[in-house]
Image (cartoon, rainbow, N blue to C red; front, side, top):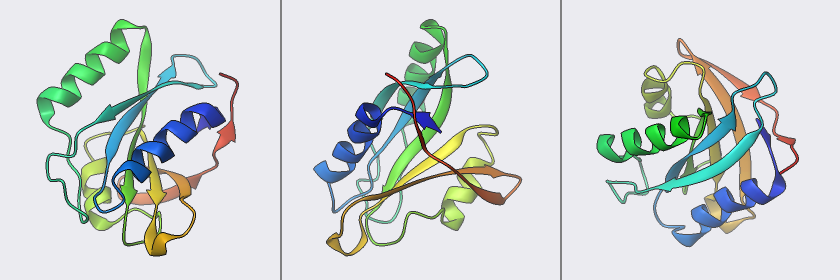
Length: 137
């Protein structure tokens, strides 16, 4: 994931606003080979749960359309893990099956330590960590 520190800090700030529940959102990227992140879009976790997240389909469609209207593409879905390390759960892997080519950014908040952020590609159930590179704004 090529994302500026400013945008990554937006994702982390969102996670820290509700450390008791998973938060979620999406990251738009430029439609070019390097795919730098251009914008973070917060979403609402309809479950307000520490164990899972889900974006309402109507909200997700609205975010997706707004991203496309700007000439960008959906580059990542992000969420937090409040009780575990930032590694995809089986629920995450199952959900990712509907979003091929989209990265999964996870902010780990377990144990009250400093937030740990990792990004993954999840294709056909295979999880591969993707480096997070600092991109210009």
